[in-house]
Length: 212
Image (cartoon, rainbow, N blue to C red; front, top):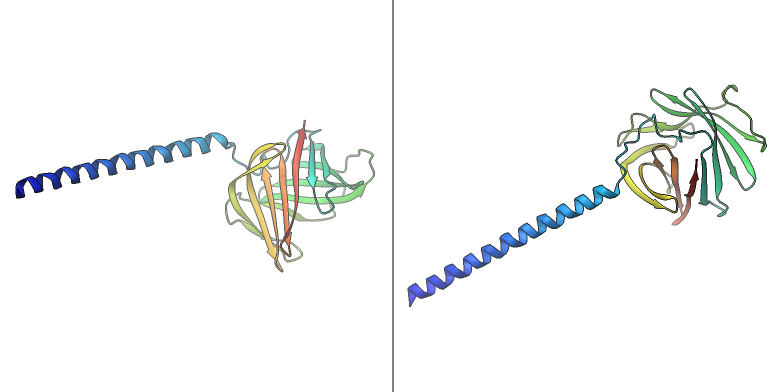
């Protein structure tokens, strides 16, 4: 009787061990499938200082949202050497900015409200020195602007879904006096989403269409 009891116990333990192995294998298979699916949906292109801005003259970026939900339109007007001129129109007001690529980052060196007439301002005398993105493009890279706002690269691989498509982005964040801003930048496109949160209210500007 005792031998029969021990035999039953042994069979039971073998059965439990078998179930554990099957469950472990299923979990590994499930995890593997998840990783493969996730990798397939991500843009493998790595963002660098060389591709952080739109790279084609005439590229039009149409955004929705904003503080008055009026949206905005940005157009790449000129690219010469390491400088890019982008005109942004919001609520009928057009502003031209000149971006300059340097070894340590991308800088906005000129900004001015302009008429609707297209004009090349790349060789105008710089009127500002504002960091757009500081290099190297690594997590925790930080910089401080002239107003005392500190910015951090907080993510190198954040997926953003928009009306214009799904983008792999880096995230630049800043927080001051309880206000939180986040900028999502995709390679060869630039900013695809701007988020500004104050008093628990979030204002979003997000890309909805790209034409080249």
